[in-house]
Length: 354
Image (cartoon, rainbow, N blue to C red; front, side, top):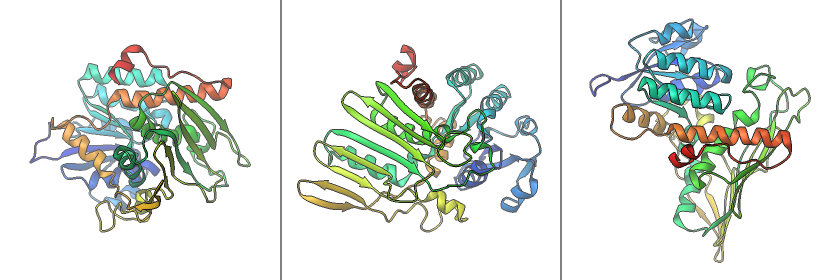
C-alpha cells in the first residue's frame, strides 16, 4: 500500500484517445500518483509524451508487474471486462474507463470479482468535474430554479464524416449511446437519482454510418422529465444544459473546455486550466441574469481515487453508481429496439445500495 513517501504507482492499459488525452495527463498531474508504466504497441508514441515511463507491448505484462498498485483500463470497450478481471486477479486496484462494461452481467461480474479480491474498482466518470455540470448543479442546489421539472443534457458535435476507428464500427460497445451516453446519464443520476423508466431512440444518420450516431432518451421521474441527447450532425445552436423549474430556468450554452485544452497540449493545472468564460443564464420573474461558471478540474477524480486507496475518504465513484449507469444504458438500448419505455433493470438489493 502506498504511503505519503511513496506515490501510488499507476499502470495504464492503452494509449489511444482516452489513454493519451485524459488518463495519462491527469494521472501525471495529481500529487501522490506516479505513471509507472503503459501498455501500448507504439512505444514511440508514449515516449514522445513521457520519456521515462516504461512501455509494455502487451497488457498481460503490465498487469503482472508487482510494482503497480493501480491498473487503469483505457482500451476498446469490448476489452474492459476481461482486462479488469485479469488486473483484479493479479491483486491490483482498477479504474475502468466508461462504459464500465458491455452489459449488466459483465458489470456485476466485475463488482463481485473486486469484492472477492478485496480491491477497489472505480469507473472513470470524469465529467462530474466539468465546469458546465458543476455550474448547473450549483444553480439547482441553490434553489434558484425551484423544483426542477425539465432537464436537458446534451453533447452534440459536428462530425459528418464517419471515421475509421473502432468507436464508429459495428463492434460490441461502439456507437454514440455507449460512448457519450455514460457521461450524460451519470450526471443525471447524480442530480436526480434512479429514474422510473427510460424511453430511447437511436439512429444512424450520417452517410456510411455503421453504428448509432444519434441518441435521444427520456428519463421519467414522476412528472419530471430528463432528456439525454447526443448527435454527430449538429454544427451549432445547441446548448449544453437547459433546465426549467417552478421558480425559473437556466441555460448553459458552452461545454466544459478541459478536453479541448488537453487536445491542445495543455497540462492539467497550468494557468487557465478548467476556466470557463461562458456564464450560466438564469431566467426568472426578475428577468435575466448571468452567473459566472464554476471552474472545472478533472484531476479531482484521480485525487479522490488516491485518497480512497489510502483510506482517507470514500471512493469518488461507488461501484453501484457505475452499475446504475450501465442499467440505464441497457434499458435505453432495449427501449430503442422495442419502441416502448423500459424500467431500469436493477435488483432490489442494488436499488437499496444506491
